[in-house]
Length: 55
Image (cartoon, rainbow, N blue to C red; front, side, top):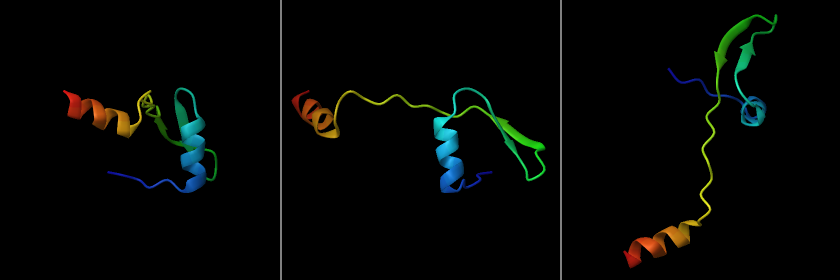
């Protein structure tokens, strides 16, 4: 199942470090998860494409 986070929740998740707990309006934990952090490439899309063409 996939749950759509609103903009505020997405921002909070993106800023989180480590495990987070998602709570309902009463403060009861309804989910725990570890946000995925994908490293950014040091190369631009253009650089990657140029290198592919050279190979």
